Length: 319
Image (cartoon, rainbow, N blue to C red):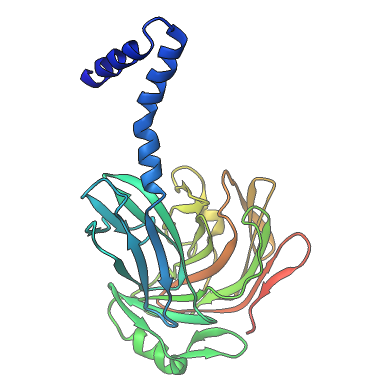
């Protein structure tokens, strides 16, 4: 309030009689702090400089935070990073480790305000597999994986994990060469099955994830006797079993099952064994499709992956 009275007094002295000019100068002074803030943001540097050629990947961000008028500065590795890491204003570098291949949006935040976003693409360089054992990540070697007519675990590795009390989560990742295709207009066809035969994972749950530059599709699957472990995620929008009937996507996933997802015209249609099972609205775009993840409770196999747009095949798995 004191500042406004001071501005009015100054403008009145400069233009005591011209009301229109007085209004112009008052608006100019009131907008000046915004111009200064925006100008200082343009001086901020927040850029990922390099990517290691294997996971876990270490990304180094070059920083110049001299234009940030705050000491409460944080960097979040992705949109899912709830807390972030505090950095000092004088810091010139920040190193972040990404456990999995994928597409991430690192965020620079000051005083709970988003200043800049940096896209980070951690490539898989082909198909890679990880095991998550209660938060401990194991990166599987080629000897642990069979990848001829399909991708799955070797017999020895499968026997090893089936002897464990708690079922791990096996994930196959692909974040590599995919020609540009819109997340609003595509078809994904795949065949998969659960191969885990242990009391540790009776429901044989599977999650199929299609990752874009903005968000993802995440489709939960399981056998018919189990409750659905939702929600299904459609471009950032969650649909829970209490809202829609996800049981239509349940079937015997101990056998090979063909799963198809069609997205166009603002709708996502799901098919199991070529039979239409579910339709959901798509209210936003996931951006350009950049990769896939197959999450198996225990273990599983995939022998077919084909991504198409309205005209041609964009990606077909080599196995």
